Image (cartoon, rainbow, N blue to C red; front, side, top):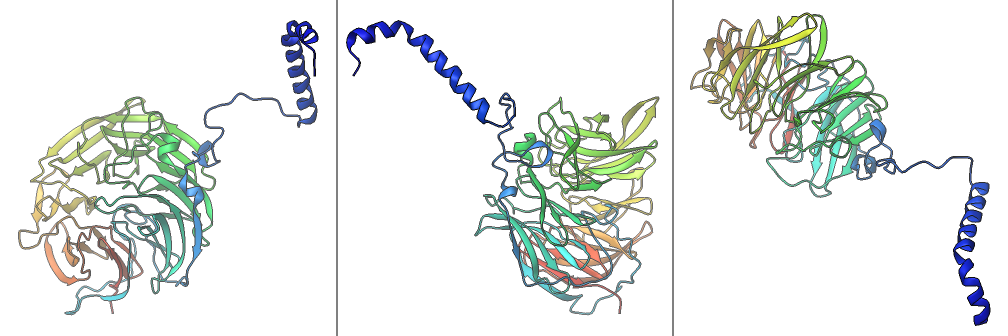
Length: 471
């Protein structure tokens, strides 16, 4: 034990001795540590690695699990690999003949299965059906791969996320591009898997990665894949749109967001104007178009915005024109984009009141130089490009908020309660060819898909595959 006199002599030297010990300790640490210099702590560098430079440690996608099922791929003709089909226009390019009339029982149901609550449509390709789904019991989002032949699950990739019922949960369609499939979950999680095996390639959380705000009724945006890149619209403080490398998830470019426009339920579309390839998006306070090459802002306009929910996507109709429509009394609008030197200039050509034409949920189809869609009173309508009504289906034929697509010269149109109609809809006339009750539930609002003579449709809790091929 040190005596008091010795201790009193040592006290004045304590600060010096402590500093020397600290220096000696650092010297030993550097001698034993690898030759790596100290680096300042940068916010975000302590996060779990993910796409585009690192996802937050709460990125649920990276905590997901792959589960094998009993199903097997069943080859068949045709493909519907993404939202609104191969050309993202709601029209099937297939030439396989389809039945133009149905018997009393309607088209044959090939298979059906119960699914989690929502309106997510199915992507179909290479003998597989891909579906975003939610398991309420396990509290998991899941990207499911089903057999085209019998609907049995081949595999699923599921990750934990708590979601409350709010007019359904899942409402986006996956996009299949080559050997990749990309999906967006209700709370803006993005995952990219091997389309064949289901192995995870990458994943991110747009809320944590880009500061996205989850839309009021969850994400409705379907991913766009073009040129080897995934185009997303997070609507974050510093990223209105972003492009990620399809194979790795690495960010290629982002579009700044100085006005703070946020994500809506609409999806990004691509088009070409004046020789410029661009991506167009309906954000919360207007429409924006960016270069498909580097995300540079090309033009924007506040002329089209919906205060409650923007759901339908823009419809390119050629000649530098875009048609917009929406619900909640928004009506519709035709935009003309011209070029003056290096500047793109958007100008509103006309507006239509909601009682003339609007579309609450489903994006209209542009075909035969006319616009076809369902207006708020449920009538199917044909418009010319000047906004004039050519015909309506009338009060005897109403379709609610249901989806529609065109294939082999006919439209398939679903109503709210699972009644499927096959109609001849051309600029010349509207004619009902057949009707059949194919779903027994409610809110049959999920986008339709068609491939190789089979039609996929869903209501709030059930998905069915129907045989609509000619015999």
